[in-house]
Amino acid sequence: MDSKKLEILMTAADLGSFTKASEVVGYTQSGLTHMMDVLEREIGFPLLQRSHSGIQLTEQGAQLMPAIREFLQANANLENQIRTVAEKKAEVIRIAAYASIAMHWMPEILYRFRRLCPEVNVDLRMVDHALEPFELLERGQTDVIFASRQNYTCCDWIPLYNERMYAILPKDYPLENRSKFPLEEFAGQEFLMPYGRFDIDVKAALEPVGIRLDAKISRVDDETVIRMVGRGLGVSMMTELMIRGRTDDVLCVPVTPTAIRELGMGTHVRKKESSSVQKLKDCVLDFIHEYSSSYSGVPTAR
Image (cartoon, rainbow, N blue to C red; front, side):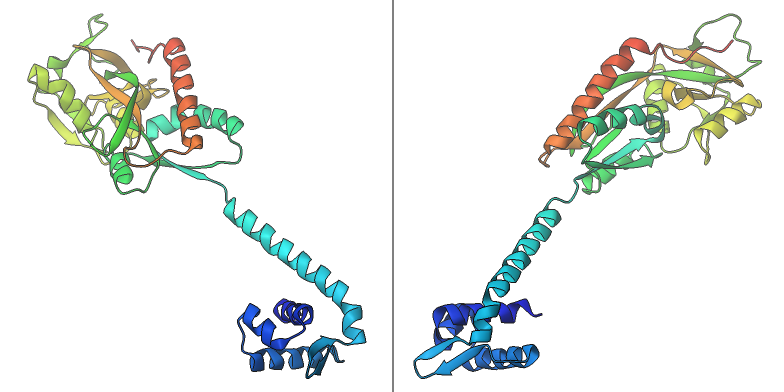
């Protein structure tokens, strides 16, 4: 049954005039009259009596009117509920994070956040390129990033953790009982550069001591680079999260002078944060406080 026709029938009956009803519902009088004729044919008996003084319901029409009003009210309630549900679509927070952060930090962070905001969905995007999170943020394609500090003015940056950098060496490398690896010793050695523009962090560590690398850019993931070092194909340098859980076949030695990369969390400087994003930030800061207090770094293999 066409609810629009029933609504017009009720309006015309209440006003007692097609002319008045046409002004209310926005149809011409002839159009409204035609619509009521069609409705009566569909139902199978007359609903309105027409006279020079106006219109009124027939006996059958009067019998139906309570049910028609109830139907129209139920229909209006349904439409309101549909709009309410549509307007309450679940919020989605888009996150872009380095693979190492996504692996070692995000499961616990998202577990805590889910307990606070179970109705909010999270779209986690794992990236391997050092600059990609900032590029996504700049283009409005992500809401929160987890990365190492870079020079992007679009980013409202919150420092989280200073991640130490380690020399990755073959097991038989002649360390001679040293507990640290001098950065100068990378000079002249075949250096396997992790991919994804990690060379930015490596060069930032080496430039102050004037080291030039014989570097080969790798097109493979961090684990493969570590395995290549383990087979004596070169040396490398990575951070603690990059090598965590992958140190069995290599030596991992802190470099000296100490080199770190600053990991942090960023949002767009011009985008207003939702309360859910702020709660996510709170979860991150609580997690980092506990992590920094309890995690002692990557065990040094000897």
